[in-house]
Amino acid sequence: MTEKATLRRLAEWVFGGVVLVVDTVFTVIRVVVWRSRWKPALTALRRYNKVVLNPVILKRGGKTVTAVHHVGRTSGWPYVTPVWAERSGQSFFIHLPYGTDVDWCRNVLAGGGCVLEREGVRYDAVAPVIVPAAEAEPHLSSASRRMHRLFGVESYLRLDIAPGVQAD
Image (cartoon, rainbow, N blue to C red; front, side, top):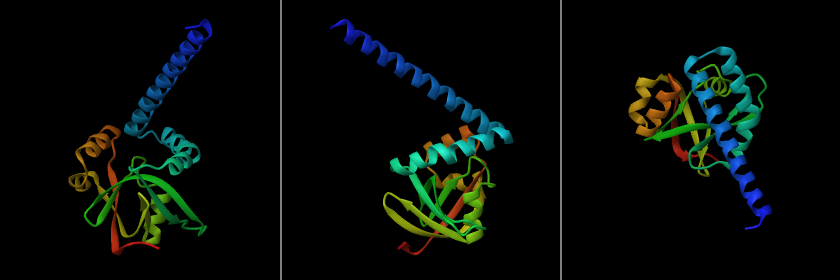
């Protein structure tokens, strides 16, 4: 192996290590912020997610991401927000790590529902209701329950799938 190749490999390892450390620190900060419920930090984290992470998550998607298509309460503008939701029978349970006072949740509640998109399938979701964790947890997988306890999720948004299942 040449000296140049060795230096390149070393640089890759160093970069990978730095990324791993930064990611770990950011994850610890997120857990502490969510569990402490410190308003200024939650607001900053929410803004960061809205501006930076949400567009990336919507583009990359994946099986665990559900897109909430909703309409602004006052603007009437259409919005799409990625969330972590779990389906149980004819309902979806969306965890609310920031609490119930987030724009997309208030839009869905005010509008009486939304369209949920998961794995390319669109569902008309109606009858939105905020439910406590104790009521939602029996409908969630054990992995989700553990993760949500770690982050201190206290409430969920339950949405029922309208008859006909798929939206337009």
